[in-house]
Amino acid sequence: MPQTLAIVGAGPAGGSAAAALRREGFEGRVILIGAEPHPPYERPPLSKEYLRGETSFEQALLQPSGFYRENGIEAWFGVRATRVDAARREVELENGERLAYDGLLIATGARNRRPAIPGLGLGGVHQLRTVADCDRIRQEIAPGRRAVVVGMGFIGSEVAASLRQSGVEVTVVDRNEVPLRRALGREVGRVIEELHRDHGAELILEDAVAAFEGRERVERVTTRGGRRIGCDFVVVGLGAEPVTDLLAETGAKIQNGIVVDEHCRTSVEGVYAAGDVANHYHPTFGRHIRTEHWQNALRQGSVAARSMLGKKSAPYEEIPWFWSDQYGHNLQYAGLHTEWDELVVRGSMRERDFLAFYRKDGRVLAAVAIGRGRELRRSIPLIKARERVEAAKLRDPDVDLRALAGAAGSRR
Image (cartoon, rainbow, N blue to C red; front, side, top):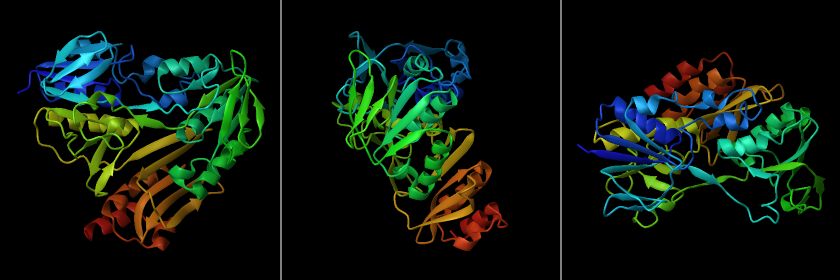
């Protein structure tokens, strides 16, 4: 039985793993190391209700403030790990200290991509990843101020919506023809585009930022298409990359994150990975996938904890599921659809009340819904079944998705 289990990364995966180790009865040392000075917290509110000032930071905490002390979890917050010596089973910290471990979980998550755009370092140019980032953006918010949001993925779309709801004049610049084009496709992206335009956001699509301009603070944004946009502040959201640096010298397999199996084990003995940083094998899809969402991180952290204790558990095969709230509309997505040949819609896209299925060769790969979250969750067994389903039945609102999923599952 191991004596010291260390977790690097105090986000949802790390926090979940620490709690699970105690829940599973482990009585040795549990050390949770996090670069931020805060205990683990939920990040989704940072682009939504916390950004709008509708909720407190305490409400976003994964556990009550005394949880870690009460459960004998050593909380090393505000401490940065810099290197892992896998041969000696040690983690080196920024202050030069070395921590010996029997088992190590890497839950370092992802970091924002920093595009090579002139003026990125000007005052008033922000990126959103941590609560400290969010607090800086909140200080910029006031009715009538002008913001430019760069990138219209999920974070950019949510930030744009929150700023508009706070009375900020918003212009969004995105290189794609519609918002969320890569994530959701053209048809659903068009729905999101119209939603933002209806709420007064200006969208500059199929264009990209050339520079941020100003003296000490940003004053305008210029685009490659020749637009000059005056602004008071900017939020840049151009994607993220997994933080794999710690394992650079260990020989661990790194490919779009830290490669792990369905039990969160890396290629290095005694080292595990979970959350946004982990590129895990998914039995349903028959390949490795990396999911950037807190729900996945929470659940995968618990799986990693059992693996660290040498306990048998079912392979991690949660179907990716996440949501987005924009202007009071709830969007949910489940599955994985890198390629599809048909989008089958139940409901009305025009009325923003629909459930749409991404299909390939008649099989449901994924689903997206606005205003129909309950129906979407009922469709998850269809995604897991990987069986052909008639398009007419998917469209028909009178066909019970649970029964349809049961029929598909029984044919496996």
